[in-house]
Image 1 (spheres, helix red, strand yellow):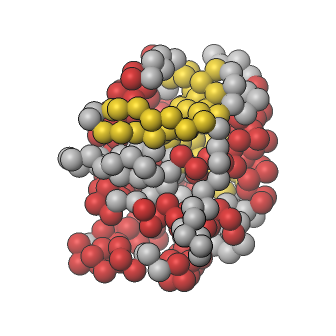
Image 2 (cartoon, one colour):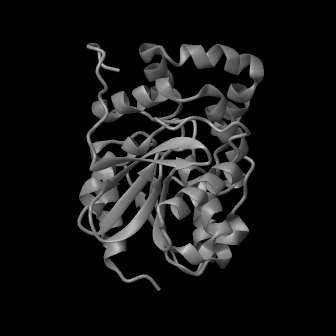
Length: 284
């Protein structure tokens, strides 16, 4: 929240609410055209995609739900595994009568998107993935070590409350996750989402995502795939991603130079150009 107690989240399109699995789910709808279902990143919300609007508004109708435990959607009663989150999205899509769509995801949201495409490939025309965590082999050793320490129950019990301190959170992200020169407004949005995220859901999502492996499945995927990756992202093993995309039939990788995991002006402009160009083509 802002110092005045008001939300800093950007206004995006139209807000809707629908019941899925016995819980009230918020989703945003923006733009016109063929639908694209977007999956926000870890401890995020639908507002994660506000910088995608210029690339998508004229090409796609964006449908962006808050996943269970994040934004305004209540957590699941069970485990927030990748399979459970994908099952939620599958039910969400059916509830709003979304039968055929493009599918996009950010970071751990890309992992959920991959599971949804694997479960229900006939619904998905093509994939747009930003910093996709598609395999444990695609994650850098340094981040795997960070995650292992963070997921330790004792460490997590201390770290989760501390994460509500903006100063400490920003220092940690700058030196261990995002790097410098991150857009200040995006950083504020991300922190507000972080504070309101359900701690159990966040831990379960991260823990399960880091043991998933969609590498062989992706090699057999026949529809178009765009992957946008920052060249200096500390989370990914870029060599592993390069080997995967060389083995895939329809993958296009856009490597953005001089950009890390945190969104900078250069990364935002480059990803907008890549996504807009990709979606301008007719899917196979």
